[in-house]
Length: 406
Ligand code: C5P
Image (cartoon, rainbow, N blue to C red; front, top):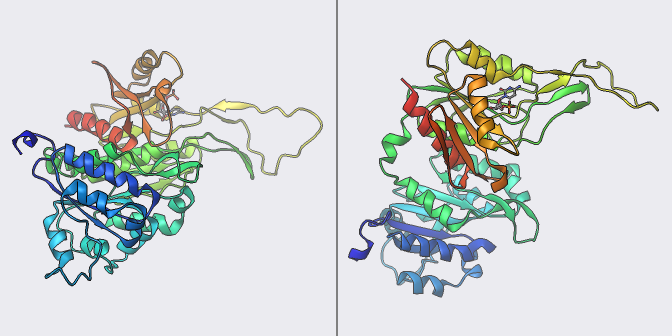
């Protein structure tokens, strides 16, 4: 196998555990891609998984029948102990709601669950399900539990679902899943992933809501996903993380201190209070530029005349941080979302707001969902990154920040 030497996964033993969902057919592509990158692959399937994709396909690809049955009398030994001990890493693909709920509770009553319970190395879950299932609190609790227990999760992404609807629940692309497997062993992964140990970072995320009266507000459509991904990435790299979040219903990443705020002024207060304790601040929030000049204590009544709202400027939190900073820390990072002259505007923002790095979105390359195309713009120049998940963009931002921290 000298041809495989030097491939990113050469010498790695990966168990692909196939759950019972329509996306199971993509597990075939994941097996292929793992092999193409040099890995030795074995397969285990739940009973439901084997109803969606034929075990013979995996036999043909891996040269070994997939493991389906914990109770095979022809197997002398403890199959789950052998498989869990063999695998350098396990990829659960697709990870269904049922499978994750059971794994989160330590169920071990089929070959996949028992092997997960015996895993020696890291476990990566690649969830796929209908968006309503993905968002279900029981599912979110299970995912949070798996992550808190040291599991890794890739996806799901927003896109076309088996039902024909669109939403968050689509399996990440096979290449993205295998990229995530590579990162489990990434070059110098351990030291790099702890390179923010002892540092305190603060991240803002989500929209702000500016109240008009007790029931109405002005808001925007920011999802908060970029800021939450940044927080998760920083926590994984050993930082102590404060996440100042505008209104959004995302799950707090494990190990992150979350402060919920509503308006731009509340966000500013929360951030200024903690500025002195921060080594780096990343403003990923979509802060409202304006707020109603006056808040009406009672619900605004409708009338026959047009209603005029007067708006006043909100504080620019990031610019305020740039002005208040004395010395090189906190390192300051801002985001820029423009529809034209993206890089020129980002550079202006860098200078006007007195920040160290501006992450500029390229909306022409597609915007929103779990992936983006961005450029990193700093005093020295700019670098356009390929299309990446928000988590991967987060890691690239922390790579940049980590190099600048004293
Ligand atoms: O000026 P613009 O809104 O395009 O700049 C975006 C960057 O500035 C983002 O990082 C955002 O979080 C931050 N910002 C802020 N306070 C505002 C508006 C934007 O900190 N009032």
